[in-house]
Length: 369
Image (cartoon, rainbow, N blue to C red):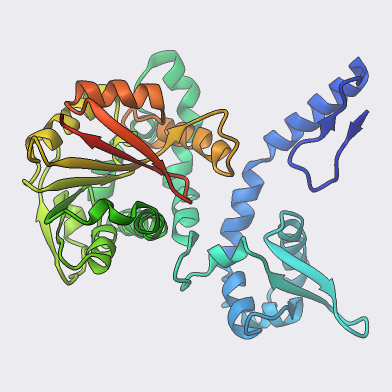
């Protein structure tokens, strides 16, 4: 028989299911996947209305009513549409983004935050809100419609949609560049906290650390804050560095990682190599190899490693990220450990080890000898 609660992502099918039951399961799965985009659109809606922030601030973390949420929504209309809002909230409650419970005395339903919605607070110390807004921006949803064309013809989906690769597009569109930088900064803050907690003594013997493709510098700034003896260098393209704030112990350097990389005791790269094909990654790795001491230098990569049998909470997300790279990057991809090993060897790093951290990424520590 076909079973499972209505909150399950996928209906479960018993081993003795007959053909009709299997077909019913297949139909249900196709309907679910067909409308999977509704999950991210509903999240985007909640963020644009600031619903998580309203519950957090107005209720001081305690559940509040739909009417209270509505009165706090910034809207040109004096009375937001409660019926629409209630349907959005019903969907997000079902998705376990918010809680819903009857108020004492049988009054209005009370809506509260969950561990998931606490990641949606705009001003939260750790927030994925900027990343959600970026990934659902029209400029980034458009390339997804070109995946079939990429299979048939090759090429880059983002360039097919916009006439430019994503980095050139960002340099020419300040609004998108700001959205992109905010998204990268929020994910950097999340992953760097996990890196610092898990890597422990990994930064101990480093005097100078260059963050290649470090964005606006938030990641290397956190490392320097935790390890004040380190001299941090944030290395990125001109239009990125132009928006970078000042940080204690960090210098911003403009450059191109395909040309050369500033010399340092260690190189740090977070979510850089997954954005490029193998040939480009090898070029970057060889430049990293030239920039560090042969005997004592090391490369610290924070990136995704696909392990299909790992069964951790980020397994599916890593597979999804591979399609994100197809849609948004210049022929980038997510890699298995075997693929990483080959890439590192060809780039001049024959020795490596992988360290799991409580994040979607893992640490790949690589050495030139």
